[in-house]
Image 1 (cartoon, rainbow, N blue to C red):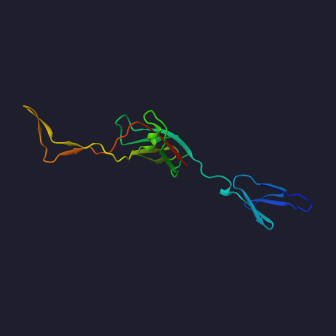
Image 2 (image 1 turned 135 degrees about the horizontal axis):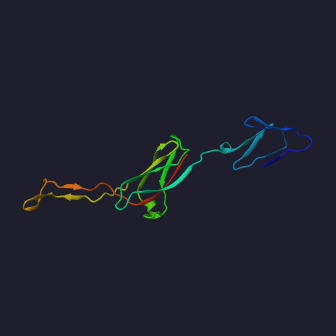
Image 3 (image 1 turned 120 degrees about the horizontal axis):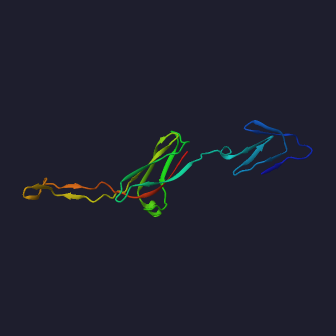
Length: 186
């Protein structure tokens, strides 16, 4: 939006920034930028620039690969992100599983797998830690143990350990391999 002031009957126009004098002899005002508006009544025109004319949050972003280990893997994994010299102990950080192929998993698997990703433990001027946990509710098979093997002079026999069977398994699922993680902080 351009406003041109001209003619024989014009007086000097004073421009201000938040009430501070910029100039007292302006004859053209040029307002630019998305969302900039000018309005007024009487002898004062107010220029509105949404968001105070810029600023806002800027993020530092990155990508890493998180390794749950070789098959059968693990239920959780973590990685320490370093080299973040501008990070503060009060910085906001977040991390998430990003759908990008790795050597072990396709991008689609990144979308459908149940992995909870959390970024925390900020070390000011250094970095933070990303933790991931497999939250899938499918458990390992439960195996029943009907007794214990006891060695004797005559050989090995199966001796019942109790009237009830012992069970093992059911510890939750394991996940393996490399997964793509994206993160950001401000």
